Image (cartoon, rainbow, N blue to C red):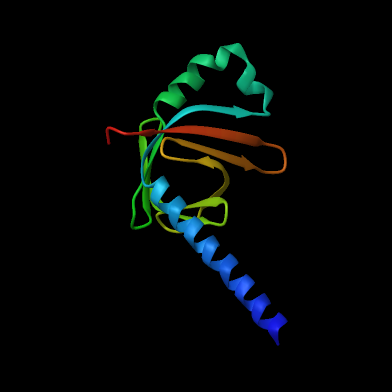
Length: 135
């Protein structure tokens, strides 16, 4: 009996810690994040002729995360509305129709840095964001 109570208490403490950590991540991610850099395993991105295009993409990409689970992304001057949530160590972003889904692993999230990792069968991307403290 003691073992069962101990095990149950242990499981509940892990669940509580997980919820607390998720809540802390939710609080940290709220705000505007500006893309400052990215890296990929794709060779085309490393081609010098793309440097200007990449620089422009970085300068025009940001994401606003709101407490109510809404988000707005700005990429190449185009605004997209959607929804976000954090589950375990992943950021999930859905489009406004909740059909298209983007899931990235959160490698780092603090008051001023957000680092995301995304991959599919062949492409791997690291996205580096800095929090815009003016907005």
